[in-house]
Image (cartoon, rainbow, N blue to C red):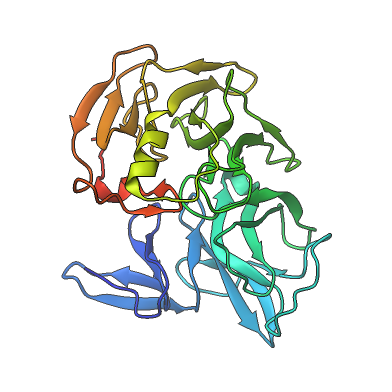
Length: 315
C-alpha cells in the first residue's frame, strides 16, 4: 500500500502506470518501490488520455492552474487563478483559492473546478466554474457540494451537476444537464419529484441514471432518520440528450456513480444492500448485503458513501 505523505490524495492515471500523490507524479516499480517523476505540491487530476496532469500551484504569491506532461517537462498550459466575475472579494489574507477537486472534460473541452473564496468551509458547497482554455474567463456553472456524485462527466464531454447548496442531503438538490460549449445548464425533471440527485452516466454517455427523493426539514442525520429517507428514493433513467426520464422497476435506489458493468445494467444501493438492474425494465437482483454494520451507517448530514464498501470489475 502506498500512502501520500504530503496529505494529498492518490489517483492513478488512466493508463495505470503513474499516480499523483501529495509530492507530485510518482512511478511505481514492479517490486512496490517508487520514484518521483515530477515534484509538485497539491492534488493533481489526469487528462482522459493520461498524458497530462492539472495542478493548482503557488508561484510568486499567485495561484496558478498548470498542466504538466505526465513524463516530465515544462507546463503546457498556465491559467492565473483570479476572482471569477461576480464573486465577492474574500476577506481572508490568503486571497481567493481554487478548490483542489477538479473534473477534466474529454476532448480538451475544458476543466471544471470549485472556487473557494478565502479557503472558507466548504461543507455547504462552493461555486463551480468551467474554464475552456488557458486565458479565457471562467464561466460560473452553478453551486454544488464537492463530494462524490455532485458532478459527473460523460465520455462525450457532457456533464451533469447536482445544483444546490446546503450540507443536508435532503435540501435544495436539483439535477441539471450542462453544455461543455456554453456552461449553461437545464434541470432534469421526474414527475412529482422534489429532489433529483446522485447522477451516473452509462459508458457511452447516452443514458443518465439518477435518484429522486422527497425534501425534508429534518435536522438530525442519524440512521433512524436517514434510513427511511433513503427508502423513499426511486431510480430513474434518462436517455440523453433530449429524452424523457423513465422510472426503473427498482423500488428504492441510489445509483452508484461508477457502478455500471454494461451499457444497460446498473448497480444501486437500497436497504443497506447492493443491487443490480440487468437491463432497462429488468427485475433487480440483490448482489450483496449488508454494506455496513447494523445501526452504524456512517452518515454526514444524511449523505452516505456507499461505494467505500465495494468495488467492481467489468472483466
